[in-house]
Image (cartoon, rainbow, N blue to C red; front, side, top):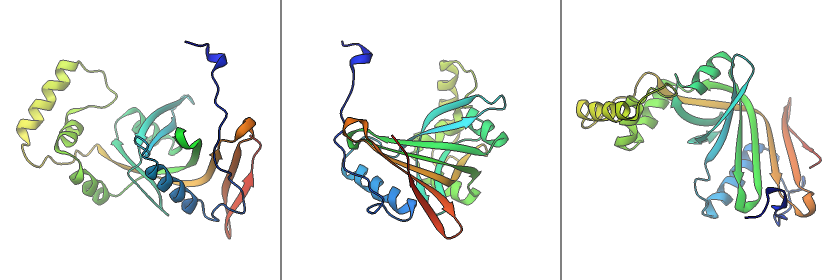
Length: 210
């Protein structure tokens, strides 16, 4: 195995120019997401979610994007998890999508709020049965023995053999963006970086040095 310092890729991605980019970052994101889906990437909706704890320390984990529109980007989790507790104290977060075969990244920042109970109920009802039972059984982010977790799963499966209810501590969050950055890998490390920030009349596009 080679040394880490010797590992490098010279990116051969397409060009991201201001005149070709969408004026609206939601449209640009949708374009790139559709291309990631067409490229048959594994979990193209996977995104890193960064939050901040009460001590100012950041924490990071992978979650799955389940919906997005002009209101923002929606994901689901346990409200009592570490991320949920951090968002309750400091309701701002950052997302990162990384589509390696396309040599692309998208960074999104903004305020986070819970989605409505009706939205959470609707999504929960679409989940596979085992996933719904797991949401009931898992006290996410708390210490637990593996045998105890399996036992809780079995108990909830027996209690709800058909339609398990959504637990009150489980539901969705929506991040409303106030900053987008689209990164396209280029040769010689001369990558394209376009940042979108809101203005009174729309979105401003600015190029950053790679």
